Image (cartoon, rainbow, N blue to C red; front, side, top):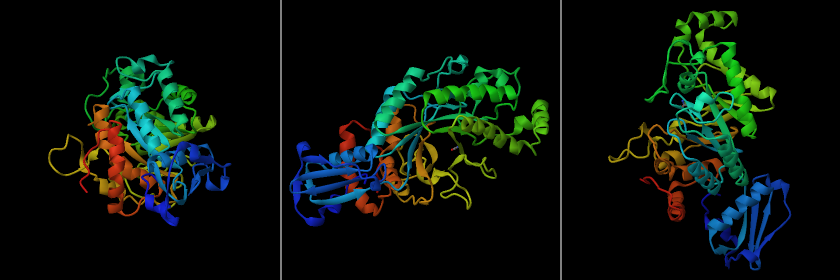
Length: 419
Ligand code: ACM
């Protein structure tokens, strides 16, 4: 459970005034699954049995949320999805490390277990790369020490940090730093200062592949999790069509045309990651099937196409919390589109997916306070969907009330409810 329904516990009636010293922890029961737990509340105390350390962590969080008066009974609880993610775009607007740590706490409080950091885009490159220091020149970024701190802090809370390095589109900031990565090395670009999809994309040279393999090597050193995201969405092909070098390269590689070049590029990135024992991820793009073994984030539709495997569902209609949370006037500027709390709660992901993830693209969220306003309370609804405990919406709203009071007490800025 994410936001407890106390009556679920009240199977035998009665209640227990809970004190820490009434908690017993039984030996692990692997049948509960790594993240599962069981709480037995009787007259003499509470017994917590977990499937493993993460389950114990979640069991303790549920106890804390239930408060001091526990109805007697048993609850057995485990998540529906193994991947319960939140993506934070730190490229469009950089978010200070202190906020990333706070967000990790908020993820853990909602039993979410993946923080996907969108670290690079047209507008900025936010990760220190020792071999290519100009990438972060003149902009805000995380040092290697920052990343180690973030990754360690997250691990203590059973959150895995998944880095994303965007290729071959959404890469203007990298081309601005190193013009030889672009399709016109004589052209001087700046990191982009508006929103949208830049036409300036990486070139297809082997030297550019090697540059990004270097980047991925440092990324793998800093982020110990299994997964590394290499982008792959929204890559305009106009520069490849115009460039004699790109046309020659596509011919030499036997690509049928520019439409195949994006898939080729992320395929090279994916192969490099797999050689190092990591699992590549890319965004889904219409008409492109990534190399087998590449996990795909499906964002344009609410379900995967038949036959697509290794899917994480990230549909923009249910999980893009940069859309307006309400169509009432007076909201701060946001991405065009409306995604209400009810819309977020009504997301019914296919249980066959590996996981689900909500997105905080930050074009219109210049500060952490803006991110909080857009994330909450929709993230609470998403967390119940991800855990698999979502049900009746009016019941959710009743349970949400005391939960939002808890968040507000921590100083979290909460956006509109509009039931
Ligand atoms: C995306 O929203 N371009 C993944």
